[in-house]
Image (tube, rainbow, N blue to C red):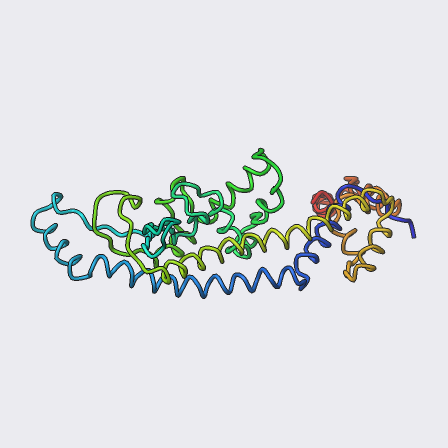
Length: 320
């Protein structure tokens, strides 16, 4: 049999199959990532229940109901109740070196794009959490949720921007974190709570105990750890893929790539690769090339109408 020479299309097909196998493999790094996501789910549930308790302690539901009644009666002048999913929580149980009581407070955002560092405005880390949390859903939508991890050491560039934008669109981000739909809206909805006041969350710190504050911090740290474990897992895949690219580029024949896959424990069907390849058989197998060329010829076998129809049909089929 004629050896099939490697070409760009075959290299890409082999690379894609082996990369998928790397991602599908049950490694320790992948297991750490999946366990951390389960922990995030559990802590989100408990943190939400705690936030409801803390917020309603400061803004009792009876007061909220009364103010809403006044709004219906008096209109905008009494429009002071709103729903929010981010809050400044603060406690006053610490003391400085001189024994003076100090306030400890931070911004906690329960939204999908909520910050991971206490900043009210920095949502870049929140994007990393969002793509990590919804990794499988984004892959199913043919997005690249690993783009932040893959480009971790690179500044913004067109390649990164392209795939980040695709992920944001798939998540339902419409250019504003307060104007989202789809997965983001579904994620955010359970975390909205009633607050009283018309100012931004920075100026309405909500009192909590030191223990409650620590639990909020534990939840937020867990979100950051999910991003970190996603990064660690994707780093291992990236290193494998970098070596894979070097090897595939050096191989002259498809059989060498198949041998590599076999050594890695990855089953690849050579016939299927060639069969689905647009040029492999045509260029590198003379028999198939000759057969295809012959099939393209629109020969007039005889002058009957039936023969002409058949010949035309065969010709058109050979072009597809």
